[in-house]
Image 1: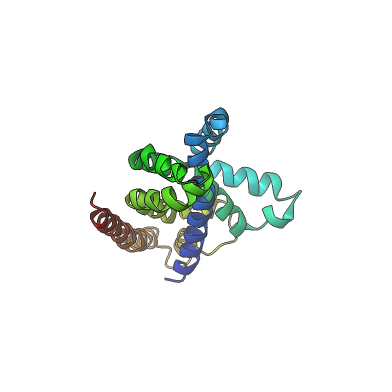
Image 2: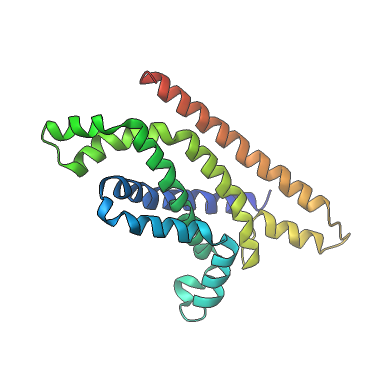
Length: 208
C-alpha cells in the first residue's frame, strides 16, 4: 500500500493536466478549423509515441541539460502522462461537442454572447456531462499507465516497489506483481464505475 498515494498523485495531476490541455484543443479543432491541423498533429504525436519512450527521451535526454524541471522524475511522469492524456481527452471532448450539437452555440450567440463566452457558459458544462463515461475510462487508464514510471526510477509508486520487493529475500518474483495487479484493480474499478454512474445520472437529469 506504500506506493498507492504516489500512484494516485501522479494520476490525478496528469488527469487535470489532460483536462487543461484537451478541452481547449477539442474546441479549437471544432470551431477554429483553419488551425485544426495543429491539434491533429499534436494528437498524432502524443498518441503515436509510447509513453515509455517519451519518459526516457525527456528524463535522460533533457534532464542532464535542464535538471529543473526535466531532471525530476515526478515532473516528467506528470508531464508525459498529462500531455498524453490531453491528446486522448481532446478526442473524448470532440465527440461530446458533436453530441451536444451546434444548436446550443447558435442559441448562445443569438442572445449576444461571443463565440468563446457561449462555449464557456453553454457548451463546456454539457460537454463534461457527455464526456463523463469516457473520462472515467481515461482516468483508469492513467492509473495503469503510471506503472511506466518505473523505467526512469526515483519514485516509489506501485510498480517500482513491486520490482524492488522481488529483488529482496525471499526473492519471490510472482507475489509482488500479483499484489500490484490487485492494487491496480482496486484503484481503477471503483473510480471508473462511479464516473460512469455519475454520467448516466447527469444525462437522465437533462433528459438524454
